[in-house]
Length: 484
Image (tube, rainbow, N blue to C red; front, side):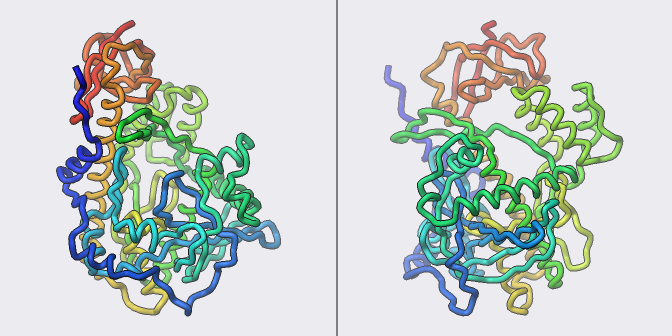
């Protein structure tokens, strides 16, 4: 009997609609984009096109939001420049494209299909910092000393040109001495020296944050490998020095942006993870591993606990990380008014944090860019306080919904991959055990499912042999029973 073909892209579109998204662009937004003849231009800004700018992103990314470059200074300090695509010059506030972006608030990346926040003519072309193209950008500049502290900083606009489009995997392997120099890097004069310098600075930034309690977590989110519409594999993208470089530079740039707007007397749309209210649960969780956390929330103590667990049990660390993420609580957007109390980001160990570095992909970043441009021009905020507060709530809700869409389609992709393997045995690890059920993670391919039989006596962290008994692709269900 032939198994009916399931179109994962159509399934993803239906899940988008069910979660309150508008997956297709409205006619007026399409007309707005069709009328554009080229990228935005402004000859009155600084000309930084000659610098050795480069982007580092996923292999298949075309919606490029950031470029980076650095310069050594006397005394061991380094000046870092982060260029952010200036989307606002093309997507005006209140325009049809902006209204659609404001409704969805984020690009949604599913296994079979990407649902971009902005039409692709913008996000992958006219507002993307594409290779070898001149583009407008907002520059976030900061100086990092040899101890990883950020000193002076500045924000301004400029013209830039991406000299090399690089990818996390190949750059990370090259930095670690495990792979050749990427061809795009070799073809761009000076970019190799740049990336080495940036890697060195990023490591000092990371060390400084970790000393203050930044949490080093590792949650498994395997990406489906597609071929002719079919799922042929699941691969876990590994963090490496290239991903960490970009993470640390973006965290620094977001902090500089928050402080810049605060100094100008502007409200900010902050990204926060509050001090955990479920700290007692975290303490009990750590005690289950024979470890102790203090009586009051302490990011450094939690970070040290994570380091010990990663060292002690590398295999189970992703599952432990997921438990900690759930106990910490979700991130959210909040408005901080000038002079008001700041809510920091507990997980990153920073007190000033906005989202500003991905305006092609996230609406809060576009909002922040408009605030920055108004401050640069000496104007007033383009959003009043009530509008910002409503946006903060809406963006938080839509981000949660986007995560659910991506998670559901990821589960459906895993079920689709496994549906021809009913009855096969797998090695697994128990990831959850409660009255609601017992869950296991198969080691290869990296998928999670429910153990429907043979769960007596099992606890989180146990290794167990399982057999696949059924899948439901539409709902993303994968069921196992115990085989040994």
